[in-house]
Image 1 (cartoon, rainbow, N blue to C red):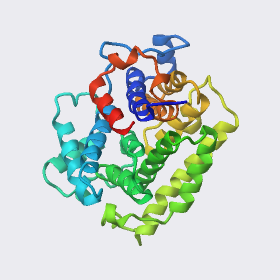
Image 2 (image 1 turned 90 degrees about the vertical axis):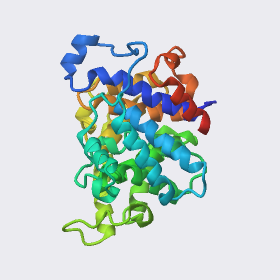
Image 3 (image 1 turned 180 degrees about the vertical axis):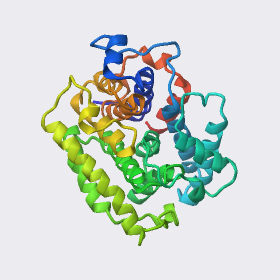
Length: 334
């Protein structure tokens, strides 16, 4: 029976991130030339360095832990905590891992005291919205409204596009459901049902006036656009799973992962191709032509949430960057 699923997920996120970091921006030919047909399969460096994906996931986790220690958990409580953690990340000397421009621009606004609804990049649905949301899926004791609202809020503080919000909520629920024991094969249908159930639910308590943009008639119309784009991405995932191909570039089937819904679906595809083999799941994400670190980190969080900490190579635990920080987060929710 899987144990330490929170640790498995948060370490898995970092392992995937570190494995995929050297292959980001490379073509498949370049990846094969550098790593051979069977690589990359092992972490490199001591420590094995992660990217902004793990750094920002830890920022989300720390803000969430701060808020949950001071109940009740509300948007008014957690928003300034996440703002502080995001600004700390912005100014950290370790923030030198090719971070995304959307996160940088939004966090500069947050650092300057701009309200997050104005600082956010309204047109962006980049994968930075959901590469970091796994902690919201790991935290126990949240109501459905709190988990959905928090998943969308942490995304909305930098990425204001409705698809970034919807994909982040789906990512958090995928992590949560796997942690709670859902069979991997049931996951795509559960995500599709969630899209339909939440299609016109706008979490105003968490998102405020974010929806008020030109040519948007209502909050329901705003958020429905995001869920509809995620449903179309799920169509591509279903098609890929109907003819599973473990040997080819997953980005050719579900997208390169630079945008939120594609990162989610391609990360899920890598996990679902290897539901009992976490190292192969993150290898498949790292050996891809798209946003390899983000795809692999998502696959790693899914695999770890299902299989637990013991499924990962024991030697990796001490070699990964931020090992002590990751261990604290995992222990808090195991």
